[in-house]
Length: 103
Image 1: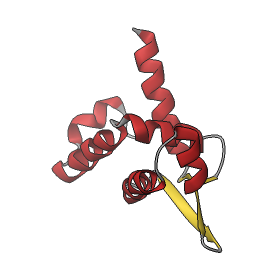
Image 2: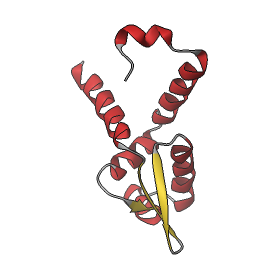
Image 3: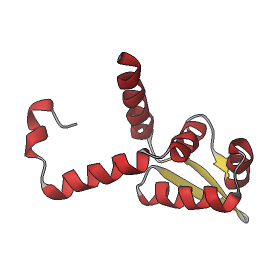
Image 4: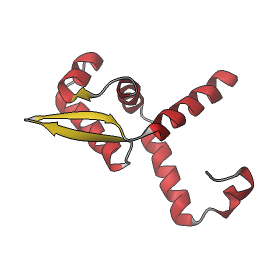
């Protein structure tokens, strides 16, 4: 973990990567997907049904989340099952939620 006093030492590459992560988290559909996956591993069809969206739209968002290492998947036959990549994702979401509720 980077200490508050070390934040000014971030290099450009790290700063850009952090900004990209926040951009990805800035989409309401992606937040909804991450919220669903915070409690259960789910397949695309179940995420789509829960969010009342098409499977192709959900797959597109999951590809973006996978690219950012926020979710991971495993294959079971023809289905892909998605889950959060690690506990850092929940921490990010909880910190953001605490920040907006603090106001």
